[in-house]
Amino acid sequence: MTLRINTAVRTAMVDAVKTLIDAGSGAGKIRIYTGAQPASVATAASGTLLADIPFADPSFDATASGTAAADVSPVLTALAAASGTAGWFRILDSNNVAIIDGSVTATGGGGDLTMTSTTVTSGLSVSVTALTLTEPIQ
Image 1: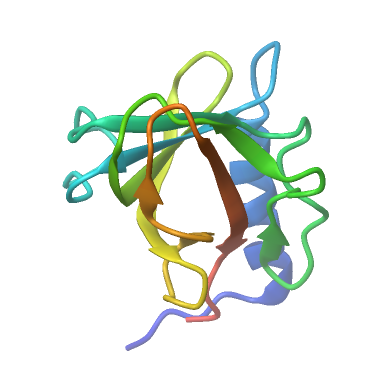
Image 2: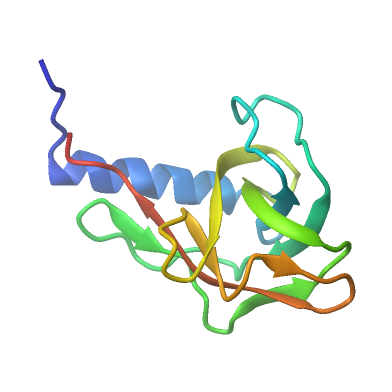
């Protein structure tokens, strides 16, 4: 049988994740790495850290129907710490507690997080164009 979750529960689940990201004294952050995503959020980060991008505080817009978009206005951006191809990301709260991992693609590529390009060059700007948290209906 398939588990189905009503809209109010989906919205509460996304709100709980947002609360965890915004925990601590400052804004949460997105760390973008090269290589393959680790087996779980509890696994140590792998690959080269390309960028450490702070969220706005709060990190996400209001939740509706189990979905919330990252606040990308102003654009979430930082200077790249290294060069490489972005493969995955990790979201941490301001105390560096890992909350979520996901895939990275260029805009239109279908990744959990999208960037204008996944090619990152040390010292140049890295920008997130979209990131959405969604709890599925089933």
